[in-house]
Image (cartoon, rainbow, N blue to C red; front, side, top):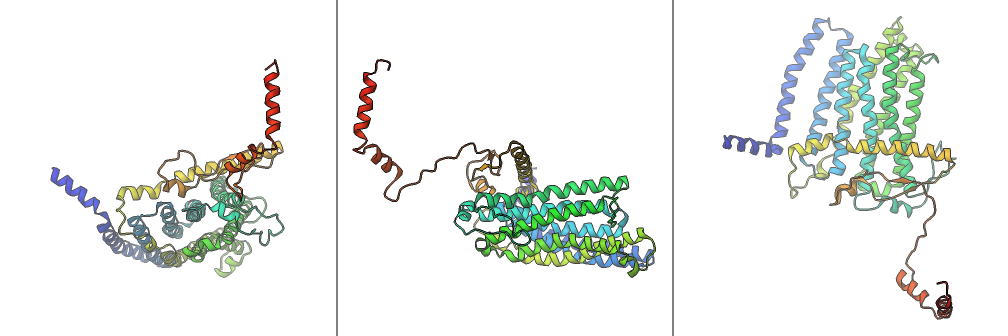
Length: 444
């Protein structure tokens, strides 16, 4: 009994050796089982155009998913930089989730709004993780805010070039972070509202008339997404030199192309439906059928785009920089659980809600200044030996009075300067006279 249990433990301790062949075998079995079932189902339905689209889209999904799963597995195997790889793994999960979601939408277009809810929420989650990935990279072994304070001012770009610039340092990092973080909160809220409106019959997908909820939801998402993308670009401009070693251009394009392009692609397709162009192209007289066709078109394009995104992710978010044979192998369970640990999301969302609430409270009281303390970033928390129970986010407190910043003199240290001042011959007679008066005062 003991020998069998020890052999099982030995087997699982060597998971890095068998996990990749296991996944390859599992994928081959899925191909052998699923492809004949899909072909038989299409032939049974008469091989309609919808079946053809589902087959072609499914083919791209079967190509995209294993590429991303392989990258995720490699990052888990070589999990040597948790502060960065945790967020990379979450970003890589975008392709399987998007691809499978789109293919399910091809098969069940009438229920697409409910299926797409997961994709839309994960879209915001990807933006959040990319932001945290950049912040942890820049805060690894250095103080990002201190570095930004020494840099020249970064001004706003078009179309917000008329705004006053954000002061380099804590204010710049704070505004960029929360400008991106607001999208991770707005997008799930609008998704839930869309589902409620759909159940109530007032959503009106692809209808831009003012008596339905669809145009307002699109406008809110569009504005929130624009703010997030703008802050991301501004943050990159300020840290272009520091980000150069990690080759940021490909990573930025992967995030923007997948998240932002897919959103605006859907908006354009809905506009084509509203203008009647989709109905004309596909020779449809029913508006409901036109909406179904537009939903299928969006899902079909996403299936193809996810295959391209999987290839781009393979090169942009590679596991090779994190391969370190001399480091001890992480446990299988530890690496897997770290991938699903979302405690950092909870902390940052709570921080963002606190920032919004405190900002609103300051406006009510007529105060507009706040003080932010440094040093509470995820990278420093993970790298330090002492565990910090508080949030990884900066603490926000109202600045009641400015603090005097005592800096060392160029001629000597602060202590020497203070001692020199106190021992000055000009002040000694005055101090002696004060002491004599104090001693002669009967009230003392």
